[in-house]
Image (cartoon, rainbow, N blue to C red; front, side):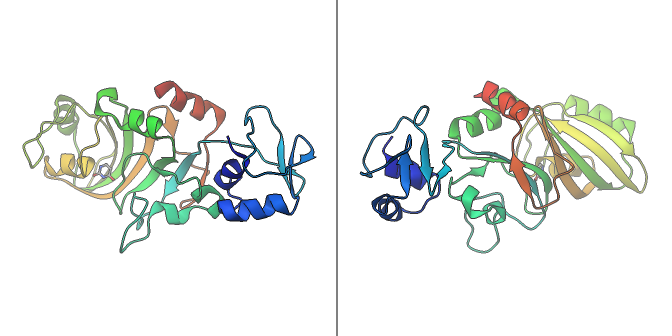
Length: 237
Ligand code: URA
């Protein structure tokens, strides 16, 4: 890969900025001052440093975000803030995008990556990746509902859902549940509850495949995936 392309990808500014950096002798390759922006480097083997600091090259970024309410799961939106607005510039310049969508008023686990192949694999309906949601429901949720969800329910547009696994945490005038589904239709959890005459008043995704929301991650913040989480993701590609 060209040196200027690599440094621009790693957030050292535009190609023009990077050329300037090289010209001012601030960039070294294997300890020798880099002379030309178009020199080819082996990102696996060559050690590139800028201002004496080693550049740890990576092509892809894999982030776990604890999404807050009020943010759109998109990279751009004319009106609302997007989840990308929650990222530091040094992560945003990798141009990650959300893996699937959570509604604006849904919180919880959202993966962000610039690895299109992985995003596709995790959201492909054929893969049937399990997603678990915690929800607060207006009204009583009963064992009958567990039974109905386990058979699949019919949504307002006639779509028959695949079976969902419903776990009741608290049943009362206000109930708390966990629902695991393998699909990702528009507003799916909310519409599944509507189909049984109940309303979701709070929704949070807590798991996607083998990746569980890190509860130590404050709402609105994010971190890179751990090696184990990344391993799982790369196995899905
Ligand atoms: N189901 C919903 O209704 N909303 C979400 O954000 C995710 C799943």
